[in-house]
Image 1 (spheres, helix red, strand yellow):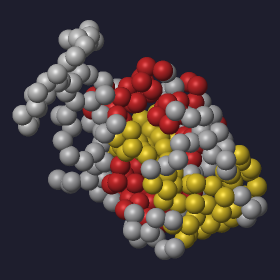
Image 2 (cartoon, protein in one colour; image 1 turned 180 degrees about the vertical axis):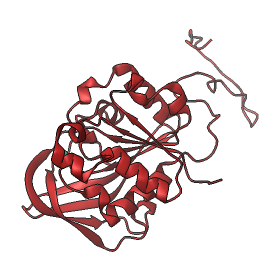
Image 3 (cartoon, rainbow, N blue to C red; image 1 turned 45 degrees about the horizontal axis):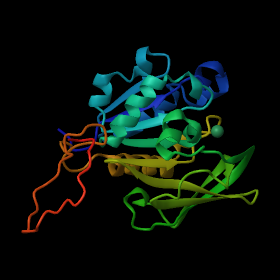
Length: 260
Ligand code: ZN
């Protein structure tokens, strides 16, 4: 038995099947690489991909997922709105979501952010230095002041997201740009972590520091506390309580109320 959260790693899984060089980097797919690493750390893991029925994200799979990792790039629009809605609801009900790299442009991330997720980018195999700007945050556990990736795709500001609730990492790129590369958000009862590294043509998810962040993020994003409290989606918890202290209830003007 483990107390670690149950993780589902979702991947559109197109690049790895269409390009031999990418398949060499990720012979079991990006989802396979991430799931294998998390499994080696003791996390119960499951994987799901776009071409499976319901994209592999059935009600049963979602109900048994504490934290969902999301990797997509070239096929965001092939993800059905119905599945997006279900994932969105589960996040507001407490499921964690870790949005990786190009998931900044995924339907579900944009819906949760309420922003376009737009950014600038350049593919030049340049160096990235990822600074920890929230030392002591659980997602930065075990890292130094910064870590580096020798070859990456650049993502630059402005990044069209709401200001993160906690900013954990800022990236610097050899070409001069900076980027908010590790961002925590709360939506309803759910926690969301956006983590930038992960372009498919580089072995990013085999990097030891990246793997550390991924395991830390899975732990951080896991639901905490009870989940039987009312959610945004039902009116179970909506009520007009009797005052705890004696007060005179005055309603000078009676109005019709939608909940009565
Ligand atoms: Zn990319």
